Image (cartoon, rainbow, N blue to C red; front, side, top):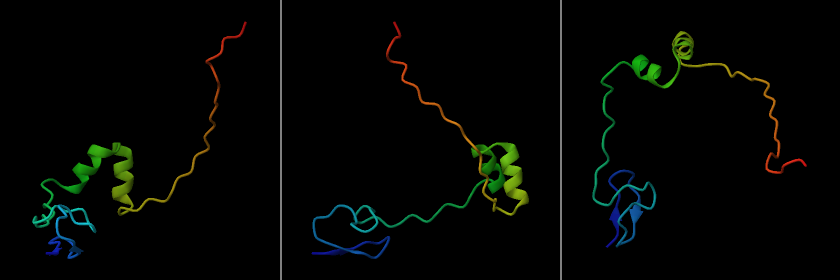
Length: 82
């Protein structure tokens, strides 16, 4: 008997242990996202440097992209010179 996923509402064939649409286990309800226990700024600071976090907070969460010129040197050091 086909079953309907409780997370996404997708129809799945009998015998499937996971939803073929979203990957949720069969028979499990989707968990609601937990409310953050600490302010988002504290969480943000744990992932990025303080300077970047300050810039994000000041800009309202949107940063303009920043491009940098990078020079890369590839060398084969596996062969010894005689």
